[in-house]
Amino acid sequence: MFCSKCGNPIDDHSAFCSKCGNKINVQEGVNQQQNPTIPSSNTTSPIEANSNTVSWSNPYPINEPLSQPVLHNHSNEDKRMILIGMGVGVGVLAILFLIILIFGKNSEKYYFDTNSNEPDNEVVTTSNASTKKGKYSTVIIYDNTYSGVKITNNRDALSLIEKDSVSQKVNCPSEIQKVEDEIINNYGITAVNLCEMDVQFARELGNVFKKIYEEYPSVRGYITNLTLVNAPMQNNYIAAFMPVFHFATSDSSSTYPWVIKTHILLNSAYFLNQERLSSSVSEGSNSGHFPKNTTIYSPVAHELGHYLSFLAMMKHYELNSILLIDSNTINPFYQLYTDFGTGDYSLSMITEAYENYKKDTPTPLSLDDWRGTISNYALAKDNSGNYIYDETIAESFHDVYLNGDNASEASKYIVAVLKDKLGSR
Image (cartoon, rainbow, N blue to C red; front, side):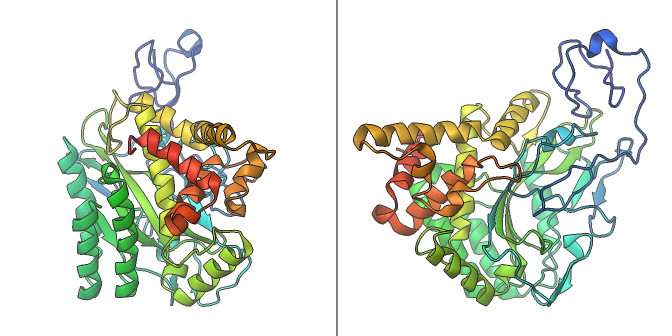
């Protein structure tokens, strides 16, 4: 039969189109016409995000030629920023390659400031965050994409990620490049772009990785990018974990393998403005929105909590890596991101921790009340009013990172389960 989205011939038993990633309806082989309509080359499929995020369009035209490598600069081509925030609603099925973006709601995990209406007149937001101008903005473009590239193994993929990063460092101070290299070499991150950041501040951020990687040595090597990003001010997040960014496609006829970047994003409006960041985290910590003793460095620990939770899910779905995705890994890959969006696996870890706690310490607290002892943000909801359970795990990890034995009991029990799932105990 043929894919109803792109017309590609597909096996009758395939769950997804190998060319465009369209999910195949089980009735499609029965009802499908012999000559399906092929979408035009400029077809896009917007996904509406919640009020704290931007909407965006698919950057991969259906009929784009793959004979030569193509760099898609989102700044120059006016492509929407591919940064889906906490609480993103379930998206519609999209066109070419969009299967990797069908994560369900909450697929990217943001750490939000409490001052959601705080103005910042020194930053002017344009339609694309990568082109934003202002005192607290970065020259780094995190969302370049490539197609028609010769990719045969992990080395090719990592080399392309590195080249894209290095090409943006031409005018960055040598002092910060030295710190970037330290982080790359010490913590196994392929690309680090902190161009305008204070050198000592950047070095202290590296120490967050040091502390966590010493306790969890097996989690090194999966994050490909740590980067500043110009985020639209309406997002108002401090930092974000983006487990998947579809960075490049191969020059093969099937476009496999796909190169996937795994980001930790640092909002330049905060990380280039330490006064604002300090005020935000202090207020959030004092009010109970964040765990006690939150610092200007520790939001990175929160994002690493999402990262470790994500790695536990990868292990659950028996995916050793998502750097390269091909026809053999697309189905578990889709299952992984569906789960990461819905939060089912996160909830199962939290529930296991809660039951362990009740065995040790009988409590009148409900599961949700128990989660709420960590921080207010541990009970974050999306715009539909549904709990984002992975925020509970990230806040638990953040709490234990900051407070150790003095962290809340809920945090300690949840992190213990997370360690078990990672095989770190």
